[in-house]
Length: 138
Image (tube, rainbow, N blue to C red; front, side):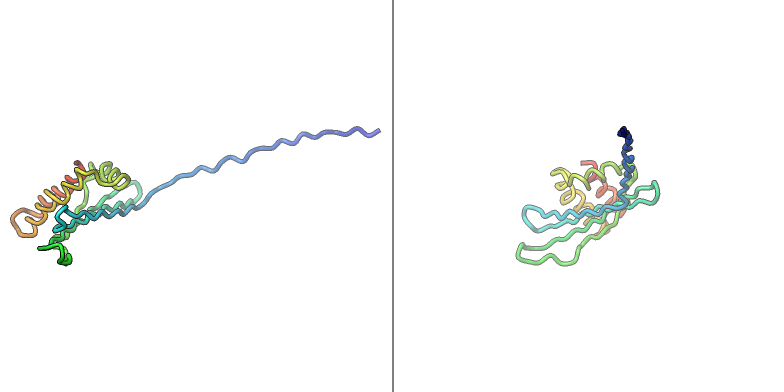
C-alpha cells in the first residue's frame, strides 16, 4: 500500500515594497478680483526642491482698470518674491488648502497697495516684497 505523504508548503508573503513619495515641485495660482471688479491680483506660489533645500517663490501681479467694461491690460505690478524659509510651512499650507478669506483680502488690499506704491517709487521694492510675504501669515 502506498501511503500518501502530505507535503506542507510554506507560502511566504513577499514583503510589501517601501514607498517614498517626494514632491519636488508645486505651482499654484490664485486669481483674486475685488468686489467692484476694478482690481485683480494673481498670487502664484511655486515650490522647488534641491536635495533637502526647499525654496518657495511668490509671483505677484496687480491689474487695475477704470471701469468694469474695460478689459484688464498688462499688469501694473509684476514682482517675484523669494519666500523666507521661516514661512515655508505657511506657504505649504496655502498651496495645499487654498487662501483664507483674510489672506485674499490682504493680497488685494495692503499687499497690492504697497506693491503699487513701490512701482510708483514711493516705497522700496524690499518693503513691497515683505508686505506680499505677509499675506502668508494672515
